[in-house]
Length: 305
Image (tube, rainbow, N blue to C red; front, side):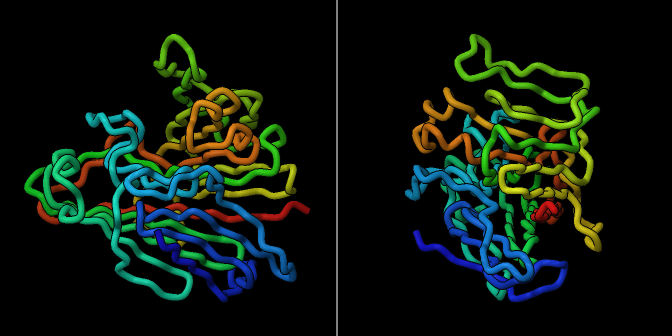
């Protein structure tokens, strides 16, 4: 598979563009890496994690980066296929310029088995944008060209690099209800509803897999080992026409699940956390005959002083 690298020379927004770049692939419209760059600092910082054991061989989904879960997140929907099919497909590049690339997947691009998972023709677009040295965005839009309403759950399943998972925490979820998954190897795979997270921050001392509902605009990863904060925003100032993904998934597989996952190194759990903007609890519904829906998330890296 051929990688396409995007970068921006912009210095607006408080981050110099020099050294900031992102790597993407047509397979899955997948962003597999983003390096941030701070003003006056020649060293780029890795923000997006992709496994060293990732398999770059379609139709296998790439482990890490920003997989596009569509038209279903996990098993939240009628499909047997975990996370839907978008991340497994070959997309087309439909626009490319400095700092930005757009990928498109249509009904004509998928196979018969995948066509049976949607009501009819659609156009799905993903645009990755390197805004400046410390910010990037991913935009997602769906147009329903079928004669029936299109329903789906979805997530931008983002893997973030951290210096040490035991020195990492996530804030912004206190007071929220969430679904908690049992650890790998448990007798039951059923998630348990927790009415309220009472902790100021989520910390990691074992496998953690939670779906938080009705999250605030910002969820923050505190990477103390690298003295960084990574802010994940579900809305973008000046683009209020975009729909917000209401939920957030926080995940780290820890030891046993990492060892059981063939395309993830046994010890790689120490160096990443997933914080994903998502719509899981409530299905998104796009009207027939040309109905559209669009969303985005923004990631900003801040160096702690």
